[in-house]
Image (cartoon, rainbow, N blue to C red; front, side):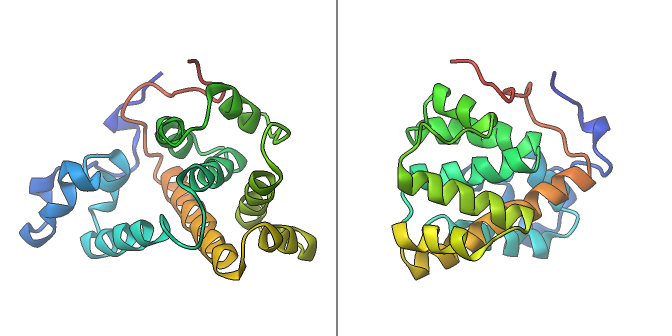
Length: 184
């Protein structure tokens, strides 16, 4: 069931509600129409920095687009962030994550993934949970490299911050929730 703007703890702003110099952030090509950004628009300078930082993290190290999405989805699932999960189900599919793989991820079952993907998913979840151990770190670094693990740490931390923001302000999804066990 989709929630309404009334469910959010803050008003979800339109571009005309923010200072002129920040309205470009609401263009379709930068995803500003999403409720996440409509809520963040109350602090447009921070929203601008958040968006720039997030965009920079999408291409750090040698993570493929698919691996990046698996990491983001793992953080969303581990934090039970409906909004993040909902947003990244389709992005993940576009990156080659199958519906069956999404269902496995939702059930905290990474057995269908390669050794490298398992290490990435497990590490991202541990970063979000604050439970990174030496062996988890080494497993991720072994299948990638130091730059990628540092980037993955930043990526998972960024999406943890996002999950906390969404939860604290009770930001609703724009459309009906995709479900933890999405359909085809």
